[in-house]
Image 1 (cartoon, rainbow, N blue to C red):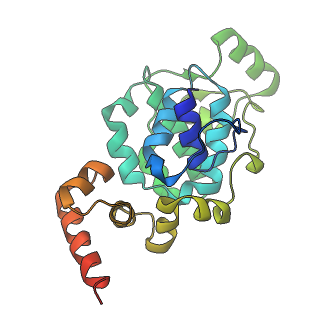
Image 2: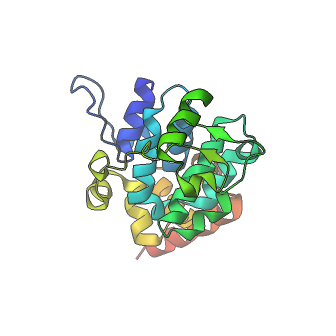
Length: 219
């Protein structure tokens, strides 16, 4: 992982034991939850440690992800088994396995099996331990025991609410475009066009929510 990604992951609740001398995560970084998750997913081929960390994060915080936003940002690449974003499908299957059914729309079965480890190692381990059944069902060949879900590796919801404005607003307004639009306004975006660039939503909700927010805060 790059240092920049490390600090963005820290900002959305990953515990990475970053050096004290490095820049600390803060709201000034304007870290976006969905963009950071996709950046981390893209790094999986180079750093397989991210798999267990991402699955753990989704178990703890997955209910507060804006799935429509994640799908929009991932684009058509999530259907391509050669793309690193195919692991988004595995995360979605895990969220569904943990009862967060809104992720179901991100589950895509690849045209050929997806492996986390080299084929020989994978098949040998599966012969010994079996495969993770809910991943095997969607075309991912991952040996049982390969995922370490340890909730201590991420901040609790209470801790992340205190640290991250975007996440906190999703608790207040629900995991929705509205929550992110209000976050952008609170961080200094006053014009709908600037909100659209920051959030990634369409113009209509940016204009509408900005107007509603201005009325609500003018009293």
